[in-house]
Length: 191
Image (cartoon, rainbow, N blue to C red):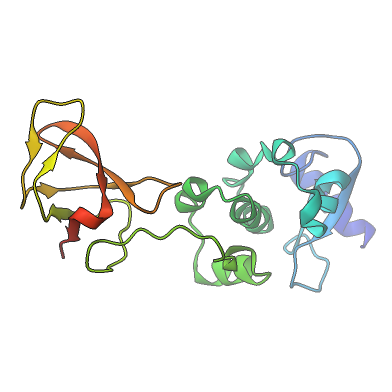
């Protein structure tokens, strides 16, 4: 790495890690697949975080707490690394909040961080249609609501559903002004 690039990165970051804010053991990290070590392609990062990027099996999620701030950094390479680490750590809420234009997203996905579909939870309605946060569904049968004094009636519309992140068979929605959990096998996605 050139001394000029390192100096410009230190000036840009105030000689702090652009991910964690630490000032110890800083190194220049070239954000792959870029090959030219310019400030537009590099970030200043601690050696420990760089090592974790390069060796995913050594990842320590606690070391990456600075991602919630760095994802808003004005410098694109910092945003790219933040996106990749959120993807690796499965911080889907944070990924959904980030905005990257098409070229930046292509750069972020270039290393395949978000391609791990093994074990991915996919919510599907009774017809096999994929459900997403914010979708609207209709109940296809009457459902007794545990802990409440009403029955959710067949045909009732449930708007702005929330997916239960760790169970593909459950969604959360409001019926008769009460938030309830609903099995996906009893709903049909509306268009």
